[in-house]
Image (cartoon, rainbow, N blue to C red; front, side, top):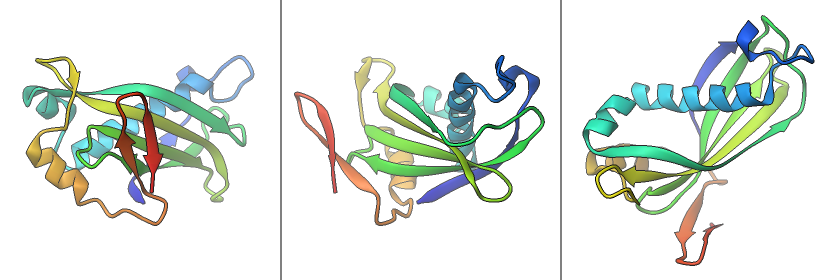
Length: 155
C-alpha cells in the first residue's frame, strides 16, 4: 500500500560514468524518502532518537528497468511490504517511475528498529507503533514471523 510519494530530480552527484543514475543513488533516494515519510507522520528521526530508537537496514537491493539521466524528474512511491506484529522488523519498497508512469527501478529494504540504550532489536515506541500500525495494508502486505534461527515472511 502506498504510504508516501515524492518527485526527485536526478542531480549531477547522482550520475555515474555511464551518464545515468547510479545504483547507490537509488538507495540514497529510498533512505531520504523513508525519512521524509517519517517527518510527514510526525516522527522525524530526531524525535525517534530522543525517544531512544533508531532504524537499521539489514538488507537492501535494487532492481533496474530503465535508465534515468541527469535532470530527469522521477516520481518515487514508498510502500510497506511487510512488518512483524510489533513492527520491530519491517520491509519497505520504493518504486521509481517516469512521468509516463513506466517503472525505472524498485528498491527493497529490510530493517529493524533498535533500542539505542540496549542496542537490541525492539518494538518502536508505543506512540509510533500506534501510528504506523494504522497504515492501510493492501492484499500484498505480509506479516514477518520472527524465528530465533532466521527471519521469514508469511501472509
